[in-house]
Length: 277
Image (cartoon, rainbow, N blue to C red; front, side):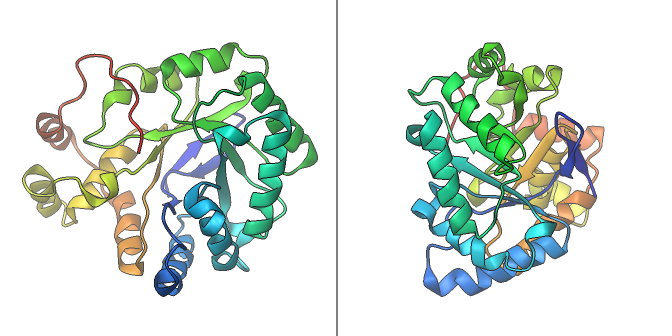
């Protein structure tokens, strides 16, 4: 099992489970719950959600799917920017806890920058930590200048992770954000690591999949996992896809593989604004 170390020393799985758009269709809930539970059985015990996902529907779905498994899971949720005030964060967290049927979150993230001053949001996060309602806090969709501002804000050094869009077709963070995070020992959590299934699988991904006796999407996941500071949270609504995701942990890409991927999916040659989905 590959792990990533958070600031403070706690280790979490490098490969977890994303849940965006889960729990929104009644016809799919049973299979989605089976997939999540299988993922946890396979060691993908970091589970990510947000109050935004289905306006709470995903959290409610997970509250049911994780029944009896809560203590095995490192549970992550996110707060809307418009709820990021001192009192708003606390109220939003309480709603998330009720939907998730738990008494604490392991990690609570600000979903993206909004108009609320960062010091207010940090103060609310720290209050929740002091109450045992959350164990760690972090941010999402923060570019390098946002992280610098956060670091300069009182209490900002408490940030445990930055969750951003990062995959073979979205390599912008490599220009300056990834180096900044590595310098400050803040893990990057990569969402949509296979671009929601839209990464082109023909060509080099198919060739490397054949070489490693794997699937193309597994190669794409292994590429994001290559960095020891990255946490990766692909979604898998079906058990067979969850097994496939878990198998990406066993793929070791060599120098030739990485060079071939760089040629097909070139790294950035200039600063790009952080992309979001």
